[in-house]
Length: 169
Length: 121
Image (cartoon, rainbow over all chains, first blue to last red; front, side, top):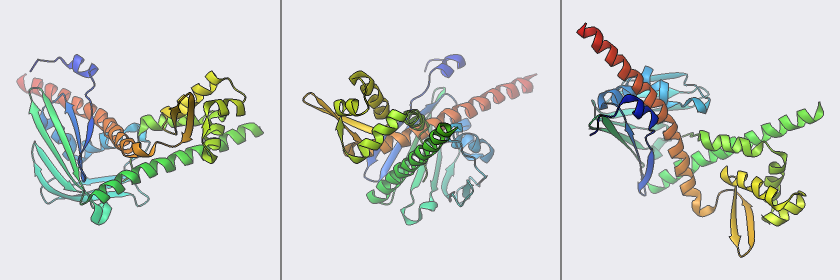
């Protein structure tokens, strides 16, 4: 492993890849320029987790974030308006493995496994989302696409309203 | 699960900010059309219309297909590409999250370094 200097590491953006491993599994990979224990900390300490899980560009805020990141512990993330993400940690092994359930999806909920593997000065993160069936994964994917489509429609309406009011003045 | 793709959202916002492009979308919502049709309908040069359609296409709002010498435009992503489209949006979401995670981790690294230095002093 080459000793990469911090400044170079900052310039080089690591790639995020997603692969549909099977009918019911999605796998995301990404490398971080830090030891596994720091990446692990950022996933398991709520005050750190909140800083990255909702990207700034999303223009949404977490109302609360409760995480008991221990095997058997529970978590709940609330955006308000009844939009909650919650579940249970099946396994938490510092600094290399976190497994949790996503129970907001009811019986179609997935199980997420994050593994952190240190490679020299870097850490390879592999995140797997395993759904109970092909249909559940497809529904989650299409659901997200529909939600986005709805956003576009709202955007369109907003733009039309803006256009109309400018026209009037 | 609500997921947003910031890059795609920006592209769509830009695409929808133009009255001609909104008109094209509205028209394609009723029926498919060639670039030539659209250029005629909106009294525009072919090159101008190609640009507008290009912007809509990049935002994923319109797809085009060239058969012979005619490029047909239709609304929405190609059916066969639906899965690729949502997987790409899912990737964009995680990519945005991980960029922010990079910053959190960099901050932890800096802190560790300073703390280490303090301990040695």
